Image (spheres, helix red, strand yellow):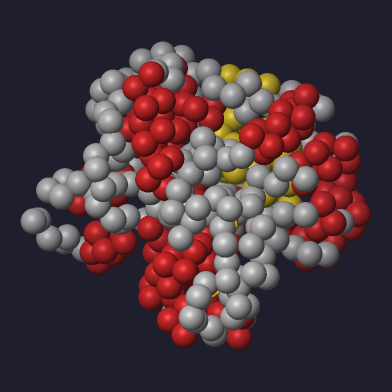
Length: 385
Ligand code: SF4
Ligand code: SF4
């Protein structure tokens, strides 16, 4: 075995999902990193915003190399999503610098966790400063899972920011792809865009909810299209390839962007290889081989991937916030972002994560989606605690 040459590679190897039978191979050939684009990008209209966006956008959360963002914009990808919390608080600054000369040609979004008007608007001003721009095209109230979290006060803050020309459109993001939240947002009419988990593993109700939102005129942006990004380990693969590659990732992206209610998507892109692979997903069909790959991938990720349905909230005998812990574990194991996972873990109140699975007789959390909760939470504790 070739040993990793860096701490990052070491963590990648130690955190990759367990070995399993290899996936069926997708028929498509991997494009070379420097390949010229094979076809013009595909566009859709982002609901009532009227913005024309490429079906594959760029989620900048896991990108630390500005040249990948610049190259994506030069290839024609025109939607870029960021938030200040990513990459140790530097993501907006890096994205802003990379896109500064291209600002007129791109659609840019950022987010706020602010819980009050003052917090949110202060956050927005900081975002604009970091990004080096006068406005963002879409400003999301971030990580909402219930309609009551999208308060009148926060909607008023978005309206105020619109009036001031600091944002063009108001959005809400949800990690959970909540079937109850999304139609409620559609009814509000103040929210122009929803950014939601959308992938081949989600329940049909979530797809139905997103379809309802799109039919009501909302723009729909797909995130978590890779359903956790978990790759299989094939002994002997070069380490970096194991972290980045996988026919399942391109197939998953094709699956998402071929849904008529998805207007654009924000897969994470770490390097030029991934950029080429994601770009190609825009223009190549979802093949039978892709569908087989996704079927096998679904089986593989079922015990690993928390769909953030939140139905287990409060079910842990020791009061652990299970969906959050499993999301942070996904950042580390699926996205290869150990630092981000640990950073988020350390933000939780220490008393809320004090319990240990090892001290539990039987796990009280029964996941209807087949996640092996006790094993996964114990893994999160082993990595982060
Ligand atoms: S562990 Fe299972 S029940 Fe809990 S949020 Fe995740 S998918 Fe839902
Ligand atoms: S095994 Fe872990 S997740 Fe399950 S109830 Fe006990 S502490 Fe909670």
